[in-house]
Length: 239
Image (cartoon, rainbow, N blue to C red; front, side, top):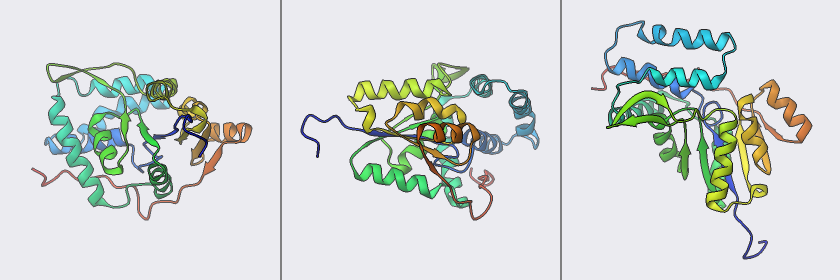
């Protein structure tokens, strides 16, 4: 051990396609609409504009904001309860987690490191994932809530540079040594988070991150394919 005055490290993980195989926001929305008894086609109708924006190159942060407008008027407590049901169904459905990165998370926990999940997703998805994995904190996009109801707006999309700023804030609050921190991410928008840490691990084959990894000496971690396509939990029969 380096000595009594050594500052601790931490591990920061992106979530979607870094720890879990699904895109949690869209998986949750499909489940939520089905559980609420919405007609067939509602999910496709609500998300069509988001997919068009993504295809046109609209920044992810703006798409993130547009996504949360779909929840305007929803009660926070009910979304949290649906999130727990969604995650239970997801676990029942099959191969949810990317084993290699979950194994890394477990090793960080065994070493007593602080573990933080950072994601553009929100509490309904992140809270059950955090609890299941035993992470210390989960920081996502925070919807604006008034009198227990979502307004449809958000404080700051937890996308891109916002993840790096959040990691720096956690380091300041916890008194962490950045050089002793490790960060994991799978998409080009995770580059700022990965650059924050003394050790960066790139998950998968994003070409932008692959270039960063080659230039900066970041580790690359290949992920094994799922035994079956990433599961979409069914909401029928839950209530």
